[in-house]
Image (cartoon, rainbow, N blue to C red; front, top):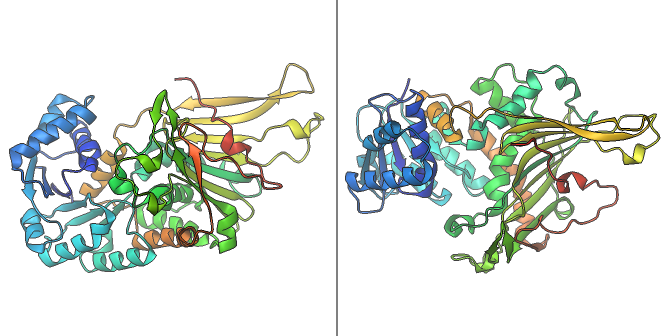
Length: 473
């Protein structure tokens, strides 16, 4: 059943203005929104409906300039506003009131999720309603378990959408397409042939005024606990029977359950954390993270995190998975890099000089590249070339795809409750060890590649440090 009412709690925030409103206009432009669709934004500002529509028009001017004007006008006209404390049942009840089912989007800080879900439970929702939570889902494993308990008392699991917009990105979905629709890859997709996989989300973007959220979360919770672990699931999962919600999510949970739990010693040797110091990014001066407005240096929040994981499974025993993310770095690099093992014998007499084959899935921009060794100008010499392609742009932005699934009631690309808990299980040993100071908080100049590499005998760190080979624009 398609839901035609959307209520956004936290409807005046950056998430709504930057992503949700443009996504709705894209859905309208694609013919996916019913003419009876309405959106009610709820927030603490003392606004009326017209004041909110004026605000929405300003957000479209900033973040949706390329959208069809008719769709922008239609979505703006469909918006209304209600002042509400999202933790007060009576005020929440007024925002969701009506006989028709409603999709309630919690565009809120995670710290408010439990109180808001409790308020929704007391307010009551029409039959057939849905609820949407953003990441991170809770702030710890125990927090996620409690939130799941509250949600289970409000709606059936299939009506709960723990969204992660990374799963709606075309190239992330192409990880599955490339694996499962190409016979040449799937027989090689195991530890016999793959030495390591790097899942990287490096940004030149620094804090950019997000201290109110980011300084309480940090890189590990903001990116690795949800986004990058989700990508890991798609890289490492067993082929599902179908791409339906049950089959797909069962296989993702299998991957998270197979992640070997890190001991304190593992955390010391297999994780890193750091934050950026003053530097220059893209020709602009960037202040030290601790000097950014709204940052409390005493929190020791990291802006760079790296975690190395192993999977206890038949397919992946012996393959290393590294998840890395950082802000204020010298170049944007968002990709999955799959490094293959060397061939067993080379008749060219240059075994030590041959670079590994690397298959790169560029996440942003969307691309695919395969680095291969070929014979060079001399018969017994080898050189490496890159075979690459750019992907066609998607017909919908990631949030457009997620909202469409919410309105239509398809939870396949959202996280199931046990999946959210398993993701916290993976990172909790890291959080605990970091809080106890077992891993030093390093620094790196803004605009650099990140903290200097630590040398570990027998470890190959060239993959993370070599630049991605991407096709020309």
